[in-house]
Image 1 (tube, helix red, strand yellow):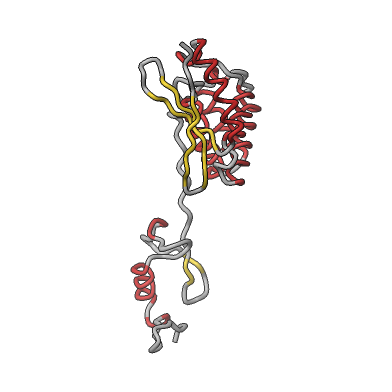
Image 2 (cartoon, rainbow, N blue to C red):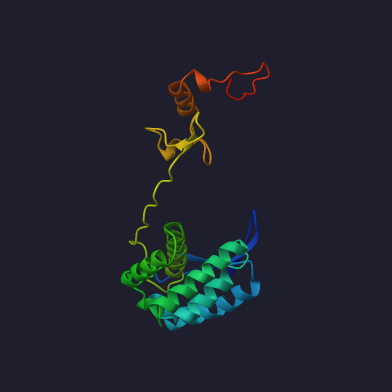
Length: 222
């Protein structure tokens, strides 16, 4: 009996998206999200049906890394913002160039570690961490498509980024870091919390005392 794969059209907040659904060997329904491209969903359905009826979906399907890269970028069009799609392309292309991998199933945690270390050497920690997050998400989708048994990047941890130094203006016009004011106490980008601002003003003495107008706006030092 020919086993079928059907296309499921879903309506989400961002628009319509297509998914593939089929029954696995145990009778459970498996679902793979394709994206807003109906033609791509139809092509993938044909391929999945061929794999399913030839036994290809019973185990891990061997796919070339370059083929996965092209399929991934095509599938994520419309599902990711343009900037995120460009980031995904840079990540996949960069990983392929650094690791020289031919088959997706050959990707190992050691390769991922090496790629992550190379990104750290070539740029900032924040950028390297972003590459790692993007690669992990892409390989997670490869697992759901049956290309990998386990994500080889799952155990690779991001490197903690150093906290930025907080500086405030003193009465003399110089900048210094208040003692005991960690970055995590900021109320918004670059601003100390209200309690720490009050402490800094109190410790600085009356020279930097502030008064308020009746409408509640602060004025400069008096």
